[in-house]
Length: 451
Image (cartoon, rainbow, N blue to C red):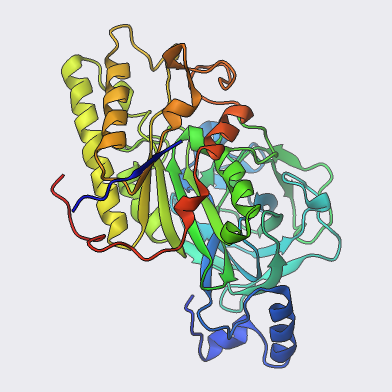
């Protein structure tokens, strides 16, 4: 039976040595009591689990986004250098873990030391930290780790409380640096990071540091969470990555959606994970692997995911340069969406589809109208196919009512493709919070469909 969508605007049980890493026996009882009083689960809380509270899609770093000299020289990056970065978590917790990625590194990545701290004044993009808030991060009890080429590393659990929606500082020191011109980053951070020669891991500020608006090596943060805490992944491109939003203000539409969820007790334990990148496509590689290729890494392998919202496909549409090729792109996108739905459903994840927003007047628009026809055909399928578990009509929300192939001037950042902060707020407001109710999957949820 078809499900008609609503069309609308480490291990839980730790044993042996792992327990020692999680919380020392000497302080265990006191910390358990403190954790209970704060509302966060303890290491022994029944049903507690790790849930990602923040993510950034790992990408291969293009030349323009590499660290500037002297942090890149002689085919080596960040040699004897400190890198300080801030990020905004979704849900809070008393115990955290950091994820570092070497997915696109040309060699092993030797991390000498890592610390976490509270940023000065709680600000995103701050180079200073609150004095005395620094805690060292370990990996298997060691200060650092060599991350194999193509791999990731997850830190030991650290007792470091983060509050919902707060900013966190992560500082890395690399003594030897990475001996490659190929490194892993997330260029569209919309958040300022800082780099400084020498070991300044625990310094309260970094005077004279070089500032860039990119993240390097960081790919995730997890919190030890109640069994009711869960995550929703936003799979997308630059419109979800936040092009047109304000640097260091966290006003991308997923950030604004998080604000809405946090304001309601019933949804305050929902993490929003932004797994988007500028230029990313569904069908073919571009800046980062295509959505079909990265689905396992960026969605299915993330901790605690129960929902997936797909808002992607605009960057694929210009591949249709004739009527027949535009029709083929449309068909291929629809087939790809069905693959994403099938693979996510197999893991018990509900999948929501968002319609593609207008690009009339942008270079993606073509005089013959093939691209606009493709966009409308894709949107019609999203709205009417009943394949998604729900549909959010972003197209209707931000288009110009007098010229539906264009964005509303009130939401257009100026390039007729990306949105300004008001536009991103409109997208966030269009996502019903009821979509994140934690209800059992309906009968037949994981069965294949012939549609």
